[in-house]
Image 1 (cartoon, rainbow, N blue to C red):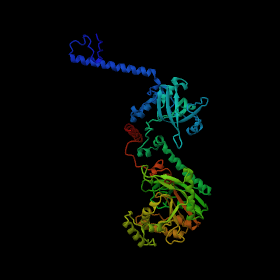
Image 2 (tube, rainbow, N blue to C red):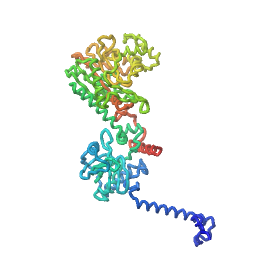
Image 3 (cartoon, one colour):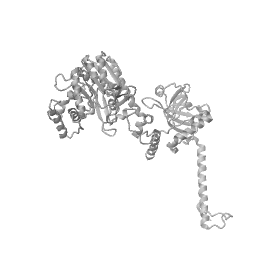
Image 4 (spheres, rainbow, N blue to C red):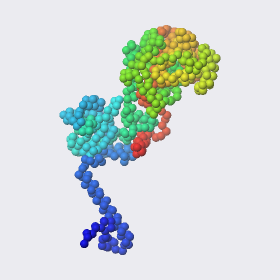
Length: 602
C-alpha cells in the first residue's frame, strides 16, 4: 500500500464541532478556521524573531537610548523636550546648564595630536576632555552608542564618540547619561583616545555631561538647510548644519588681517572716524538718516570716511587707514547691501600711480597667502555655471577710460565733458546701443552706464580702469597731462568694482567749484550727488600735502576668494525684508519638516 501524502495545513479536516461552533454555516465555520490559522502563523513568526534577537542582541540597530527623530513632530519638539528635561531636573537633580566644563583640547587639536593612531589602537592610559555639539547619534546596541561631536573652527572638526557601557562607572550611569542627551545638544565628554577597528578617530567615553540642551530639532545633517531665507535669517542654523560654509568667514577674516598687516608694515596708523555726520560726504551715494535726541538733530550715517581721514593728513598724520562699516540707502541686489565693509587709506606724498603699484602688491600677496596661488577659480553664474580663472599675478592690465570707450564703440567723444554737447552725444550713444540709463541723464551717469556695458564687463582678471573724466570725480585731482580728466583708477574683477583710488584734490578753491557742480546735479534730481561740505574746504585751506587715497570693498574681494556670487553669502547677517511668516522658531520647524520631505524623496 503506497504512502499517503500529508494533508496541507490549509486543507486539513475541520475539528469536531463544539458548543461555540454548533449552528454555524459551513462558510462561516471555514472563515473562522482560516483566521485562526493566520493568527497562529503570525504568532510563530513573532516568536522566531524574538528568539533571533535574543541570540544576537548586538545586531539590533534599534535602541531606546537614542531618540528616533523620524517619529517626532518638529513643531512639538520644544514642548516635549522641555517636559522631559523638567522631569529629569525634578527626579535626578540634573543640571541642564552648568557654569563650566574644563576641556583639555579643542577638536582640531585632538585630531592633530592623535591622527597617527593605527586602526583599532587605543590609549587607555591617557585621559582627555572635549566639548562640542552632537550632530549625529546612532545606537549599535543597548550598551554601545555612537555620537558625532562637532567642534568650532573653519571646519566641522568632527570626532566620533564611542560610548560603551563597559567604560562607564556603571550600567545605570551609562543609561542615565546617554538618554539625557539628544542630537543638537552641546556636551562635554571625558575619555581616552583611539581609533575604531574601521579607522575612525574616536574618543572612548567614560563620562558624558550635558552642557546646553538644544530645544529645537535641527535640520538633517545629511541634507543641511537649502532654504536661503532660513540660512540668512538664522545664520546659526546654517553654521551648525552646513559646516563647510564656515570657511567663508575665516577667509574674510584673513583678508582683513592681510590688509591690516600690509598697511601696518608700511607705517600706516589705523584710526576710527565718526559713524554719524551732519553732512553725508566723501562719496557719491544716498545716505541713511537718523536722529540725535539730545541735540534734537537729524544726522546721517556715514557713506565713507574719506573727508575725516584727509583732515587727519592735514593735521600731520601722513599715513592713516580705517577698516569699518559704511551705510548707503540704495538698492539690495547680488552685489550690494545697505551696510558693507571697506578699507580706506590716505598716503601723503604719493599719487595714483604709486597706488596702482601698491594695490598689485597687496592683493596678489593676500590672495597667494590664502590660496597658495595667484589663480583663483570662480563661477560668475553660480555653482551650475561655467568656471573662469581669475589671475591675480601682477602686474594688472590698465585701460584708460575714455580712450577705451572710444575704441570699443569706434567713436570720438567730445572732450569738454561739462558741455551740453557732450551730454547729448552720450545720451544718443546710449539710445543707439540700447544702454538703459535712468534719469537724470547727467554726463557722469551716462558715462558710467556706457563704461559698465563696454569696459567693466570685459574685466575678468584684475584690471585698472583709469583716468576718469573729472566731472565723475569731484574729490580727485585733475590729470597732469590729459585736460578734463582726473588721476583716478578703479580696479575691476569679473566686471565688479573692488578698489577705487585717486590722487587727491588739495586745492580748496577748485574743490568748492566742483562741490557746486555736484549741487547742480543734485538739484536736477540726482540723489546720489555729493553735498557741499564747507568745513572740509576750510581744512584744505590749512594745507593738504600731495596725497593719494584708496578704498577696497572687503565684501566683494571675499566673494571672489570664496566663489560666491551673492553678497549675502559673505555677510553673517545680511539685510533682509521683514518676515511675514510666524517666528524664527516656526521657520526652523518648517525647515526641519522640509528636510524630512527631501529625505523621503531622495
